[in-house]
Amino acid sequence: MVEHSVCLTRTEAAAAPERVLTAVESARLEALLQRRLRREPLSHILGHKPFWTLDLLVTPDVLTPRADTETVVEAALDMIADRAAPLRIVDFGTGSGAILLALLSELPNARVLGVDASEPALAVARANTEEHGLSARCEFRLGDWAAGLADESFDLAVSNPPYISTKTLAGLAPEVRDHEPHLALDGGADGLDTYRILIPQIFRVLKPGAATALEIGFDQAAVVKALMGQAGFSGISVVRDLCGNDRAICARKPV
Ligand SMILES: C[S@@+](CC[C@H](N)C(=O)[O-])C[C@H]1O[C@@H](n2cnc3c(N)ncnc32)[C@H](O)[C@@H]1O
Image 1 (tube, rainbow, N blue to C red):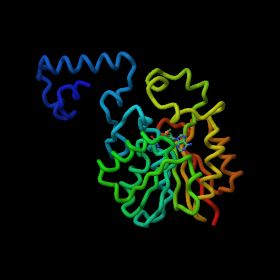
Image 2: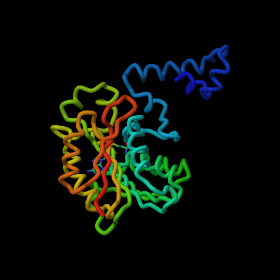
Image 3: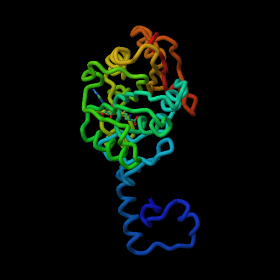
C-alpha cells in the first residue's frame, strides 16, 4: 500500500528508504489503510494481483487469483507433449482469465476459449487478455459450463470451479466471504455440486486422448477421483500444491 501511495515500484521504494511521504501521499496511504481495516482484500485495494508470470487486473467481480491455482497451470503444462502444437484449450469458469492467460503465455500456438456465467467477470478477463497482448488467441463466452458447446472439441480442459461448501463459506474470513463473488466460491451443500455437473460435460467436449486438469479442495481428492472414474476418464492422478495439500486432479479421455 505504501508503494501504491507513492507510485513507486517495490525496487524503487527499497532503493529510497530515506524518502519521506508528502502530505498528499500520507493522506492517500491513510485512505488505503482505512479500506484494509474494513477487511477489504489487498487485491481490491490495489486493483491487481500477480499470477504465474503475469500481473492481472482484479475487481470485486472476479475471484482474486490464488497461488494455489498455479498448481493447475503446472499440472496442465506437464500433460502436454508438444508445447508448440496448435492446441485448442477450454477454461471453464475463467474469472479473471488467470489460468488461460498463464497457459497462453507458455503455449505459443494454443488458442483458448474461456467460459463464465458472469458477464462482469468476462469483462475483466477480456481486459487482462488485451493488457497482455493475447486477445488474438482468446475467445470468451457467457455460458453455463459446457452447456453451450455443442460441436466443439478440445485438446485440454482446465477449471478452477467453485468448491467451498455453503456452510464453510459462511465462516470464512471477511476478505473472502464479504468481498469475493459467491458465484466463484459456493460449491453447494458439500462443495462438490460443480464437479458432479462439470466432469461429465468435460468428458463430452474433449477429443479422444485429450487431457484435463481441475483444481480441488485439499480434502476432495478421493471423491473427485471417483467422479472422474465414473465419467470414463483414465490415468487419474492427484497433484499437490507447494504446501503439500492435494490441489489438482489430472486425467485423460481414453483414445
Ligand atoms: C473459483 S472461480 C475461478 C476463477 C479463475 N479461473 C481462477 O482460477 O482464478 C470460479 C469461476 O466459475 C464461474 N462460474 C460459476 N458458475 C458457473 C457456471 N455455471 N458456468 C460457468 N462459469 C461459472 C464463476 O463466475 C467464477 O468466475
